[in-house]
Image (cartoon, rainbow, N blue to C red; front, side):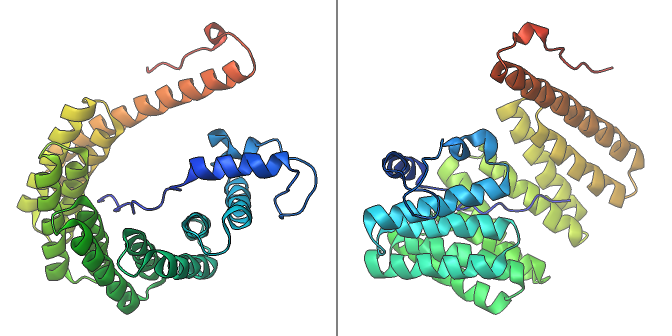
Length: 309
């Protein structure tokens, strides 16, 4: 299967500023509801706890309270906080709440920054991706077009942000089986990335891997195989032959071969992919166990490292 285009804006983008304001409010006894009370110990900001969605939501909600108290209701920091909270709801399937928060962020950004500001384009992108996930394709298409128009106006038509929005726009058409329009956008995005980043950049490999799946779905196996092999070559050059991204593309190439009846080659690639992923899992487990032992003040020499058979 092809990898899904990951939306670039799904990353909290103002963590440092919020941590500073968080420290100010916590020192004054402001709790997560915005009222004076017991000071928090700050553990929710520890990245180790961010895989807990409830904890992450609590942190994001606190950041919003902090931003509003320190900057006022209409400030870019507040818009960022709405965006970050919306992203968490979006990622966890809370689409209605996410839409409300995204729209509030957009409203602030348009009023404070202007209609053609890059942050407004980010809001359009985020809302468009949400509408795509909700099946509101007409609304998503309109927002992607507005986003791309802003990126092109501010940075020019060959900027990486244009490429990112094109990828997400292409995925919208792709999901509706509008292959002709999707291919135009995918290919334009790939060309922008190659020109801006170079032909061996990981972002180029991501585009090629997505294109491979796109072509495979249409039975264009020659094009799919070419794109997939090139993505593998880039991953190996950048990260080495035993990286999980290599394994992912090898698995995709195996699917392409299997669809053409090339079962022996497909099986060989599948085995290699599985071996890489198993080794990567063992390595990650070892590192996790080592970190746990470190936290418990136990010597890492006492941690038994997992080994492959």
